[in-house]
Length: 303
Image (cartoon, rainbow, N blue to C red):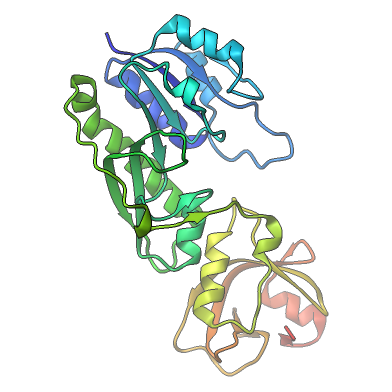
């Protein structure tokens, strides 16, 4: 039986772990993270999933330690897999797998290498992304590509909605190529690093809205950081505004800033085009047309 050690976290980690088990891969050890109490844990637990299947679990602060290396040397895995594990694995760990070490990345590599690739793809208005299984080498997201699966990004999809698609794409990638990978004849295509670039992590402050930007760019920001992510925001004279969901519209009524017409709320952007606001909060409370009535005005300046 093929034996693997799995480094995993998040929904992709859960689904890919289950995929390995469904394909009769012996998972000898799961390495995952302790949940951060300061983080919004909206995703499934790899540790709980492994426990359900009776798989040993460790949660080291640093995976690249002599202790874990010795543990992997004793296991002698055929494969090492990383599924949304948040730490880079050094060559010594990768070398413990006799048939190779592979990572599942949430983009169509070589595009969007690095951190939070789905959020970056949505922010940039991409119309597709996907999942890529690739060899792990010392340089992040640079090893040969074994399998890819694309998914569409619709114009109003949020990053959370796209993430759900990428989870399925990752599962499809793994299901499709695993028999060939274990047999030893899976394709290994060199990655053209010039065809993409690296992106770093994002912070909550990166969600601040610049209303002088075109409506398309504002809309992309809103959906790139929409819940379960921190959300797009700005400060107004009426208070702190979080914009959680928008759609583009070509028939918005006249108005400026953030304004209400009938039962709908709109916002005018820097190019003169408007977005319809489907969900927002003002000072932590849901923004509705009644909010404007309470303020005694039908618009809020965003200057």
